Image (cartoon, rainbow, N blue to C red; front, side):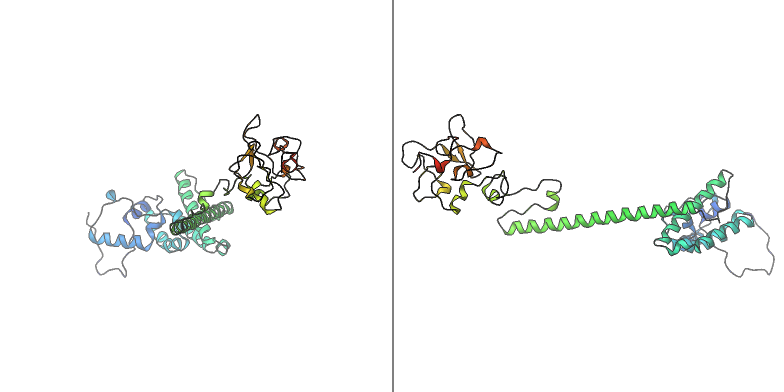
Length: 333
């Protein structure tokens, strides 16, 4: 370090402004430096560093803790701008340039945008975009008056902040939904451990899939709820809910469980039955060319079935004839 002369009897009233070494280096070279370096935290670190050692400008590096202008809040921008303006003289900027930077911050601080919703975020975004753009333009030797507020850039900043807010809201909703589903799953698992009945599928498990029902569409329980459906068939096992004149399987009139008639022959034992109960609770033919055919329950009744949706099922469950149902079968009791 060279030795400089001093004027005897002339001191200083205050310690000169301490600046982060990297910021000092960049400001002296008139280069862009993030405004974070002028915040009190960065200045404090610069003071501590200056107490420990004297660092040459050639060894100065950017701080790993530095935050880009785009992530600074508006209060942070306002807190750091004074130190930034005072440091401009390190680069020997002309007075009109220093005045331009000062007017830049004054005009932003007095702009009506700050009175709008999210106005401070919009203005902080505008500051980051415009200050970097000015230094880029200076590198191209095409500087502009930074103090003039660009309404177009300000509108773009507002759209960006609105977009960020919407994305954050969506993420919050997704996180809340995931948390709710996790709680529901935990409660259902706990419930399944207490009861022997398996739990219903959780919202996550049933999402995007057709809801499963405990009975197929042709089941007697579901069919009995749709008497107005022209294609519906009433289950044979619901027949005990109305007065029965004849069992549709054995064609007998004696008292027995017609829902689960297990006789292997007709009521008069002249021949075997022609149908059996299937898993859905309907009768189906067991032999012949129509083996496996599920029969219409209404067709077996005295009034028959008026639906034309399944004519192939209109056969007698006692003799498989298509001319009548079980209630009118000549082989019945």
